[in-house]
Image 1 (cartoon, helix red, strand yellow):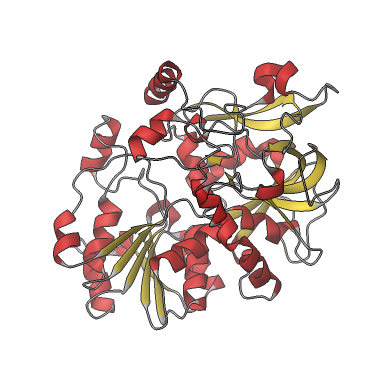
Image 2 (cartoon, rainbow, N blue to C red):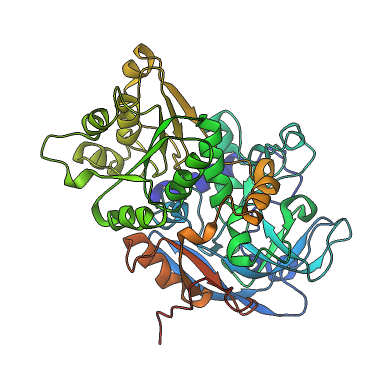
Length: 452
């Protein structure tokens, strides 16, 4: 929390670079009702961050069109992502109290600016979690997550040597855009960042093109999973689960998925949905037995590929726990080190779980001496994949339903966040319904209510 406040002050003092072509820091239309709120006075429910481990449902103004390329969506579906937990915990800097969260959503076009093309009122669409301009060097190559014109944050540029695109509901570090865990949302460059959903793809499938499906696919193909590979996946959450399915789609001969602790039930869940998957519960290993030793016993010389689908904020040992608590590092290197030592020499390791800053005790010697390929998969460039992935959903090559366990109310997201964080109630992936949602599609969960 203190780091986030300091970062906000530093960004304010330094100022943005002025490179963005869409307005920054519109993280809640209630911050300036006259400028950002709909003139009708209509309000909406939204989930906002109020401080570390504190999210709340509030009433705030409905957003309005403020730029020619804007689309206002009635949100018909959103979800909760593992990376939302990094926001909840304050691990991502430059959050401000009142920021509307949520980077995965779909909806229907409510209104739009005069510059929007190819859309009309009532169209069903899914949004990419990143905001792309469609015209810069990266956007022309469909590498939408690295758009040069939608995020002018100075600190991110200084830390990373460049910026990511602006992102919905993901702090002022990524532009300060209001997210989609709300009843309405403003989508800048709507013609670029919205994909029409066909009638045969219900929201409960189409929604996940926004992030999890594209992110999982990017993890698998960017790390180079190919025919015959043995793949080890750290993390049995939704991303890990879909990476397992997609590794098999790309020809993997075996997939071993690793998890443990409060999340260990997810191993059985994934196994029930993808029976070919092998599981490894690191908490069940004999004392002194490492994940690396176990993998090398199961696979001669170790897996060909390792995929990191957890994130850097979860320390396994006390050393990293205290270093992170004291601000000596932002991310633990433990899982990355396990991956490097587990794969075959010249093996490939892909990082898709969120890492935000710096880490200690990184095993660079093993990386160099054994020729390990360490690949930062980056924020997935959704636009590069989403049309292909939509076709894969339509023809049954990939099925988002295998990870979907709950349908919940938007008004209860504050409770859902806590259950998701604690991995309670068998909650793998949720569909969040609003007052604008259609009835549940056949084969999807019925509504679960947590408040009276």
